[in-house]
Image 1 (cartoon, rainbow, N blue to C red):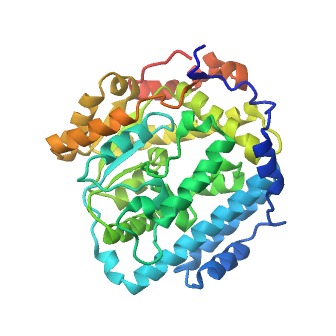
Image 2 (cartoon, rainbow, N blue to C red):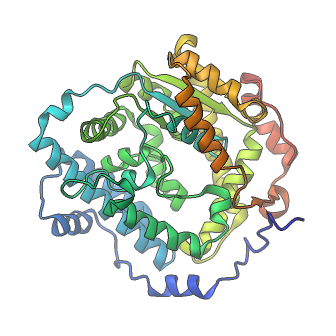
Length: 416
């Protein structure tokens, strides 16, 4: 195994660094998470009290009770989620305040966005960042997704924005504590991030599942129409467009694969790109990343239980994608297969540009080429996975379980 290959051999019995031990020991979560405590903290931090339509409070309460019910979380896991809920409530206060003072924001059109859906770990992040290099398209970097509304007038140099600096500090500390995370999913502050961060301001989305085992929330999310929460996210996009153009966005989230109906209802003129990859390769990458992060947020890691949860979750996502794929017509949507994309990236970009009616100008090509050259694959090392050995998964049985997806799409099987 070369020096660039990373084998994480302590997923079941993590060897905690002194930094990790200190982070966990110093975290002080509330004894019980409550929606009111979150709202009170957000109002105290901002001096604002108007959260807009308060129907979201019931969902926030369910988030809190779901996290409380997850007794496997340690004090860092609970404290980090509580603090994140406060951040989202602060963002909501600022969004509602900005729109109340500038109602013209809601008149802005989000014009023909290019939206990427696709399995987690299927190249969606790489693809959205490549497309984001085109200066004609608007995209949302991680730091802006974390705090979409600035305090006062933001500096012309975006790298000096306090929000950028705070995000770099936070995620820098996180990646210092979990150094292999960058090899799986780097959280660079200037990289394009998922817009479901904006839906979270309405206290919706599946992202809570990546950080805990919120069974009650999962049941609610999967049985309730997500269209209103996609609409709230679009409202925040209108605000960001008002703050800075251009008006045509490139967006992405794996969640969209199971929400193709709400996505189309809210963005009816969008160009949809769906990336596909062998779900077994996706699962082994995703559960390894989650299990590695669990050493920071959970009392005990349980890789086989993590695999069972996410095998079931990915199956649900893919079954809904198969069910609803026909909602998007061929002249507005495109299926991109991971193996073909990796073999000929430029051809994939040509197909997306043609479908979106976006000329691949010399300037756009140069910007994309510069991004690709500065972000080679595996630049932080390549993780070596072992789905059977680390997670006690029967590979043959798992392939059979996902036969329905291979029957629906010509996805290439990958050697695990």
